[in-house]
Image: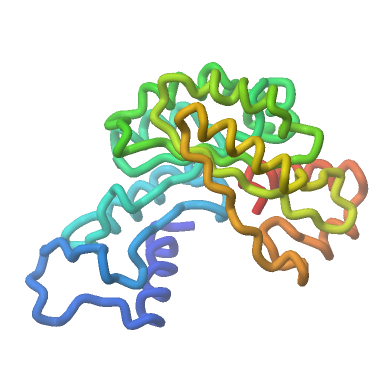
Length: 249
């Protein structure tokens, strides 16, 4: 996508909601996000943003500029599966909030769930997070973690997650997996997710559980029912890895 196509999506949403400043607002003035109908921008679920760095950079700089769309950089989040070199560039050249599709606490499992880990393993990814400019309790990194039954949802996994993120101001979004017919994975039991979340919270990290929506009509994130049923098993497994890497969407 071009930067214009990225921004057009935001403009269409604002236009549909009548979400534009009054005509009397001075040019270049920063319009407070409070009261806006479109107050936050998240680069997620559109492919890997950091593989399209130049266009994403231009779009987000325009979105955050006072002569552009005047969104605060603290209200713009870029989500990545872990393209380490461009994480550094994001911090230096864009300066928005960062989210990481994590989903596993060791390289062996993450290689399977998020294949880019084979190129940029956890040690490199965690170092890039620790080095992210402006990192603080007010500018935490969000780690996305899809809960997979019997795969990454044990208390041992929770303990390793806390150890892995030690020293990184962070929030951990726990995402119940959205199954679809033919999927090799199942969503963790709700009690397991809550126990996992309680452990993370007790160790000082906010760990909200995302509310699943649309499961009953196979419209939740990642539920590509018609595609998954047509695919060969090997292709379906590759698709599942891609969906999990994209936050289970």
